Length: 314
Image 1: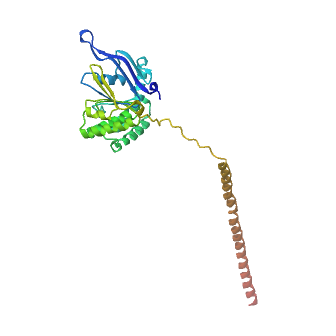
Image 2 (image 1 turned 90 degrees about the horizontal axis):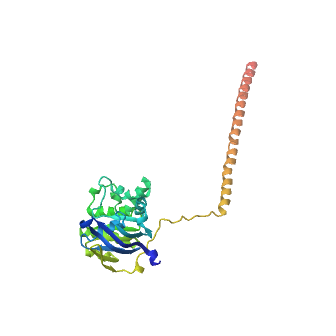
């Protein structure tokens, strides 16, 4: 695969400005970034350096002031808001620090939420959400409420929600920020498994120990990239394996099957002959009964004749 085909995100000379005049400030300034398919990028830096702003622009939740942003070779600034929402629902999954689960909905309906924007029916949404929860061993808690789960379980539900629509890109903003060390390790192992399947992950973190999971570490400072270190070559990145459009195999029936159908028809006609033959037996029995009935009166007459002859003799 060429480098052009392998590029999923390309950002050139991007600027995000807040305020006007003396109060003007830049969250991102002349920012450039190219992301290849299958990368696991960790973005680090002090608070206020533009990490979360960058994630929001990549996730089509915010709009840049100037510059160009290409997502899968499509210029985002030329796409309408409606098409951007459709593109976001199909290609991008989000994981937030505060989980962002709806407390009034059970786990399975929280996971199924992104599929509403994809036009799925309710039954199909729940089936796909249930299958995704099984992957994280949460199928027994499908109808638990979010407040009935631990912090680590809630974050795993949030990860399941980000994956339910099979997106190409996962954006994670401090996914382990509210978790203990054990839950953080479980969540990061899940993200590693997702990455090994070929998904592109861009994650913001303040924890330098988590950089061991990444294939690329970017340090930001004052709205631009300070350092950019790749730990895995582009040729060694995992490639996505899509199984969504597998054509079903069509089996052509052989000519032998036609002969078997003919024989089955002949076998079906045999019981009819048996049925025709079976009623003939009761007819014979009826004739025998008639004969037996006719024979009985004859015997009675013979008895009467013998009685009359005995009287005559007397």
